[in-house]
Length: 275
Image (tube, helix red, strand yellow):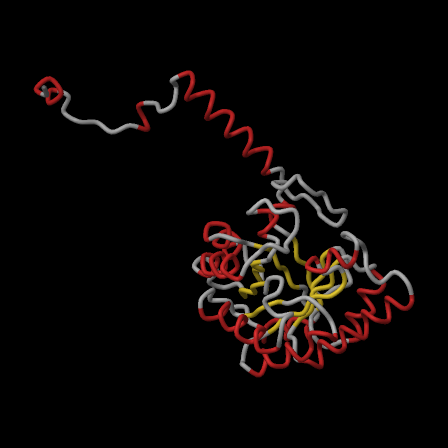
């Protein structure tokens, strides 16, 4: 069954947990889709895990459109959500709607995600009025890393916790169909999840959320530049890839690859006639 923003809301009502993973290319999207994951996020995290930036701030609309379109070709059953990159929506409500529209028209996204609380509610309302579903994102919002002074847990104190709860409610009122909670204490994430009718998707926010999202390179141990506490490594694919690359190099140098099984035959008497 195709996952949509409607099935997301229905899942919360039924108490069914939602799974989400990032993807940035056709091959990975197809594998995730075939595994039955509910949603794929084409995250601006691609700036770090695909393009080698230190943060997400340098990612452009063209980057997001390019990768989103590639993912869309492999995602047949998963809901495809694409991040709005830094400065694609903060500048004005008009820019937010235009750029969200580009992600849908050119990137084939089925929903967009943007970071922030009350300060982006007018942007969200306008995008939703344009019939584009929106996923919110509060807590640690990576596009605000400079304002936060680094990647830090959000909402630990009473005032900060109340602010996140208020922002989640404001986002729901603005019309988002779901909200990502990143690096939020588990107890606060549970409180937020209980206080709103839309699904919460946690990343470093505990099991009390309505769903979870991870960067696939993190959960497969393919990205070693950072090691967040909230990541569980489900397989050591990164190490397996390095071993395979090294084995390939060795066989090439030894002349054992390609073997006869990897080659094509012909009538070799033809060779003798060549000059």
